[in-house]
Length: 182
Image (cartoon, rainbow, N blue to C red; front, side):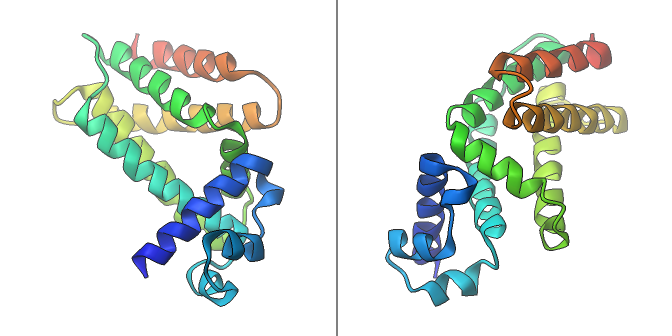
């Protein structure tokens, strides 16, 4: 099922990038990926589930990239800012997909709670690893990373809603990082 699931996820990403959240319809994902609609439903319960599945794949790729090439900097602040610059480049480079995923994560759907929590936890861990630059992660480092993750996610939600541009996301996270790490 792994190869079919990957085709389903890839179709989801392509459709979302073309037309955003509304373009991700399970029947269209099935058609675009060359699988039966029942196969899509056996693997994913909703479009939100599809989009969060696609995000999970993206998080795995981000984790590998960050661990292969950790953010550079002499201080925790410099490394945190380097992390967010890279993360923003990755997320904001596909704006329709990013908006669709943010909408899926922010639905408040109880079925999505576990996947949403997993995204936040995984990203918080990457932020903490970036902050410490190979040193042991303390409770404070973990708390700072969680706060920065929350600021970043809230900034992405604001960006998705048109409150500010790409630079506004980076600026808000950098201000928070300076307050916590500067």
